[in-house]
Image (tube, rainbow over all chains, first blue to last red):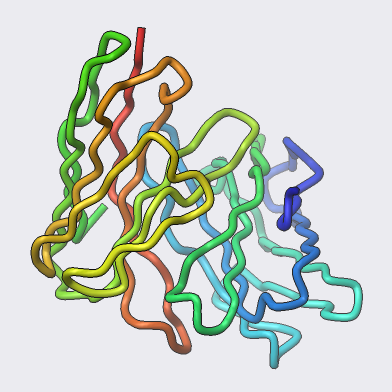
Length: 113
Length: 114
């Protein structure tokens, strides 16, 4: 039972354009959502997060949107850069679970010149 | 990745052999975790430790044991390795649960069981 789903295994975007990565979840107990970025042969690195009490969080070129009623979140990267090419994981945690994260399967983003 | 050190980085085991994956953190965080990453599966939690001396099962604990002897170190042991345990293993740490509590990951251990 996949509680966090990333239905697009890959995405290709031109440099300078917007990248939109999507994530859906099924567990209503999730109250904190995070995006991680992963390069080959490295561990995931934290990118941005959002609490369920908010619907948007912005950090530089990265913005995460949360739609609780639809159980959907998205990561927007504007403008996309070649260095953004990586696998992006959506993750979620429920309050009181010591930050145990449930991950999606990842989306591979390729930013082309 | 700064703060979390995993050893070894690569390992090949024969079926039935045992080994311990080591993880150490230098950020004095309470919580530590072991995840495995398999193709098409994302990262799945094996075990976690909310504080020194405590451990709890995650989503996929079968075939593994863990030990949190002190705040800094959290080890993962495979008593009798099986081919299904071929995976990339990541150790992570985080502060206690609260706003902005993200996990920091090590660089991973790539394990192959033949």
